[in-house]
Structure formats: C-alpha cells, structure tokens
Length: 412
Image 1 (tube, one colour):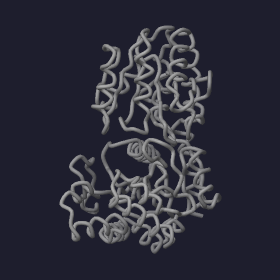
Image 2: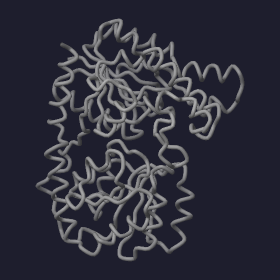
Image 3: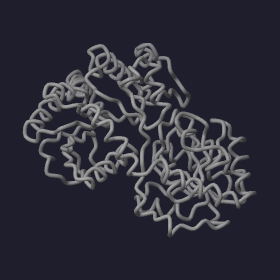
Image 4: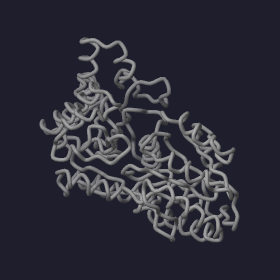
C-alpha cells in the first residue's frame, strides 16, 4: 500500500513527530511505501520527495515587521495555503497514493490540502495530537487554566481573551481560521479521525463531530531497544525522579518544583526546554540543589535517564491527550505519578502502575511522591505492571492491526 504521510514538520520536534516517525518506520517494516509531505526545514530528515515540500515559514519572524502586506501573507498562508494545495496535487499525480494519513497540518500546510485528496478519491485519515479542531489555541487553555468558552463555535471568545500568545492579531487569525475551516466544511472531507485518547474522542463528539467518524486508537511504543529480558526491577533503582517534557505554564512544572522543594529523600531531574525555563530555575534555586535542569535531551539520553530513575512525574494542568512520556516510562518499567486530568487516567491507574493526584494541588502531589519514597518496594511492583501494560495494550503489532482495520474500512 502507498501511504501519503503528512505532517508540517519532518524532523524531531515534539510528541506528534515522535509518533509520525515511529508509525512511518512501522509501516515500512510491514512492506508499505511511505510518501512524506511536509514543509522545508534545515533539520528535516532527508528524503526523495523533499522537492515537493512547501516553502518554510516562521510566523513569529514574519510578524516582527508588522504591516498590511506581511499580515496578509501570514493570514493567507495560515488559513488556506495555495502553495500546499498546488504541491500536494503534483505529488498525488506523480505517486498515486492509496490513502492519506494526516497529523499536524494547521498553519503551515492548512486543510487546503484536503481538496486535492478528495478530488483524486484518496481516503483521508487524520490522527489528532491536540485540540486544534475545537479550540483556536489548540490546548483548551487560557492563562494556565482550562477554558472551553469557544464551545458552540464561539471562536470570537479567543479574540476577546487574547488566548493565542497573548496577542490580539494572533488570536484574531486563529479565530478566523477556525470559522473558515468549520463553516466551509473542510473537516467533512475526512473519512476518519483517530484520537490517541478516549478523552479526546469524547471531546470532539461533545463539540459536534460525528461519533461514527471518530475512532480511538492509543499510541504505541517500539520495545525492541528496551528488551524486557534485560530489565530488572530492584527495590532501589536510584535516588531521583524525573519530569520530561515542555517547560510551559500549562505543564504544571512549577507545582512539581514547589512539591519537590519540600522533599529531602530524593532529587528531581527536569529534562526539557520551554518559554518559562528561566522562571522555573529561579523558583528551584530557592532551596539548595536537589533539583537539576538538563535541557533538551536526545532520545538515547532520555532512555538513559529513565533507565536509572525511580519514577516519572507528569504534573499537567491541561487536558493532556496521550503523553508519550508515559509510554516511555512504562516501557522502562517505571511507575508514573500524574495529574488526574485529560487522557492521563486512561494510561495511569491508581496504585496499579502509578499514582494520580488532583491537578494544581501541590500538597496532594507531595504526599503521593512521599508515599512512593516511603514504600520503595512499590516501585518494582508498579513498574512490572507498567511494563506489562505496554506489552499488552500499546505494542507496535497491536497498533498496526488497529490502524489497518481503519485503513481497510475507508478503502472499502
């Protein structure tokens, strides 16, 4: 089968790219041909189809020199890209794909690419990695708090709240984009939407999407590099716990730091970058050096960090979809302490493979961490169940079977 794999970035940038490239490798291993479509970038992985990629655009840089011309160019590219439409039309004609699998396309590629796909009768599958189809700000977050004011297609609320980067212009563009894409029926061209979490599926249906066109398929993680026979579950793996992810307000890292400052029995290690790193480092420095920041790490470095950690903490205050870091921790046989929010409780089960705490509740988080540190025998027991869950529910083979079922449904 020839599969057109579409994502606006073709280099390692975040969780959606991690999934996209893992899926690409999985499908290739099964004998399928992958045809990528993306945007040019200096960090892109090399491929023979790069000439068909759209030109690079950095919206932040484009708006620095504010003016009518620059604003119009950014707005037009952001909402409906004629270049992306033209380029994918050419790619379709030269490669004749059987199916198109979309991931993150907004802003840089835009749903303009859906029309050529529909014109050539290519079934469209779209895996969603955030809430962009129902929220102009993609996250259902405003000022670090849950916000659903745009429900009922009230996208003008985003402009009133300046929820996109605190900017009236960016929020206006995001709201217009949402109105155009919904009211001109772009999303009706998609055969199936795939959601990694049941939570996201339920949100889409709640916001008016046809439940028959939304299917839940959890993400997966390859286990070849993490061989269960080589794993051990000692009572005391090490003396640190970790946070791995973006350093931004909605991730709740400040809450984790405040909890960790009161914990003397172990160290917190934070891996990741983001807009509030300096602010978080200043907060952490208030109480000695039991908190370390490692910055952005390569995949091999993350594996090494997890291998020797006691457990992972995810303190998010936003509707997390299906955090990939949970799968990584589980694959290494590590329990997870996480917020009871969004899709996280579908992965982390209380006192089974981890612990759940109430979002924003620093004291509740501290008590959960202290509980694990005081009962370290639970680390091995929960870790074994975490690894078993990955093998049972999130394996590459099971994911492939689930996805092929969806492919066959839309092809038929």
